[in-house]
Amino acid sequence: MMKTEQKTAVVTGGTKGIGRAVAEALLERGNRVFICARNKRELSEAIESLSPKGKVDGEVCDVRSESQVRMMLDECVRVFGGIDILVNNAGVGVFGQSVEELEPEDFRRILETNLFGVFYTCHYALPRLKEKGGYIINISSLAGQNAHPGMAAYNASKFGLNGFSEALMQEVRQDDVKVSYICPGSVNTEFGGDSVSKEKAWQLQAEDIAQTVIDLLDFAPNALPSKIEIRPSKPPKR
Ligand SMILES: NC(=O)c1ccc[n+]([C@@H]2O[C@H](COP(=O)([O-])OP(=O)(O)OC[C@H]3O[C@@H](n4cnc5c(N)ncnc54)[C@H](OP(=O)(O)O)[C@@H]3O)[C@@H](O)[C@H]2O)c1
Image (cartoon, rainbow, N blue to C red; front, side):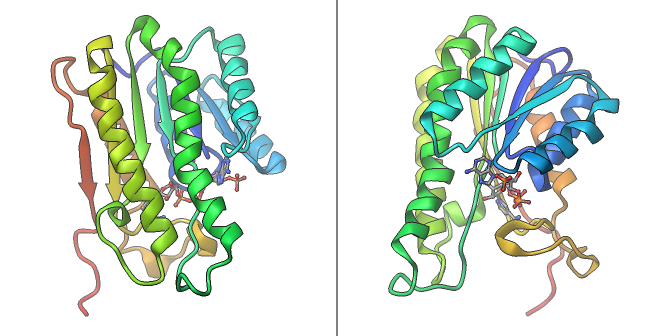
C-alpha cells in the first residue's frame, strides 16, 4: 500500500521538534509535505528552510479548531491534489501541577490539542486517505500508558489518544488505511517550555522519531505495527 516516495503527507506541528524532523525526513525521500502550526512566523521560516529539500507548503492552523483543520486539509488537497499520509504530531503539555493546582483552561487546552485535534484531522482526512489507501501515524507518548503525579491532563490526553488510535486502526484497516501510534520517552525538544540542549544528548532526538515514522511507512503492505514504544537506550542512572 505504502512506499514513502511521491506521497503527500500532512504533518501537524511541523515547525519544530519532532514534527519538523518528520517533515524533513519525508521531504528527503521525495514526498510532498504540508505542515501546520499556530505561529505564523515560525511556519513561514520552517517552509522557507525546508523548501530546498523538496515540495513543502503549509498553513496556519490551530488543531483545536474544527473549521481551521477542515480548511487546512482542503488547502493541502488544493495545493498537492490529495492526502496519503497524516502525521498527528501537534501536542502540548503542562507538567508539575497537581489536579488541584492546574487551571481548568489548561486542562481543556491539553485535551483539545492532543485528543480533539487528532479527531478533527482524522475525521476530515479519512475520505481522502481512503481514495488510494493511506497511513495515519499518531505521536503519542509513554505517558499514554504510564501515569505520574503532576501529569494528569497530559496522561489523560495520551491515554485517550492510544485508545482512539487502536479503535481507529480496527475501523479502517479493511479500507487500506493503516493506523499506528508511536509512544516515545523523553525527546530533546522545546516541548513543555524546555529547550534543545547538549545536556539532553542522552535523550531520544527528534530524528529518531522521524526515522520511526519512515520505518513504519516502509513496512510491507501486509504488515501493520500498530504501536511502537521507543525510549532512550541509556538514561542517567538514578
Ligand atoms: N518531547 C518529548 O519528550 C516528547 C515525548 C513523547 C511524546 N511527545 C509528543 O511529541 C509531539 C511533538 O512534541 P515536540 O517535543 O516536538 O514539541 P515542540 O517542539 O513543542 O513542538 C510542538 C509543535 O506542535 C505545534 N502545536 C502546538 N499546539 C498546536 C495547536 N493547537 N495547533 C497546531 N499546532 C500546534 C507547535 O507549533 P505552534 O506552537 O506554533 O502551534 C510545534 O510546531 C507532541 O504530541 C508530544 O506530546 C514529546
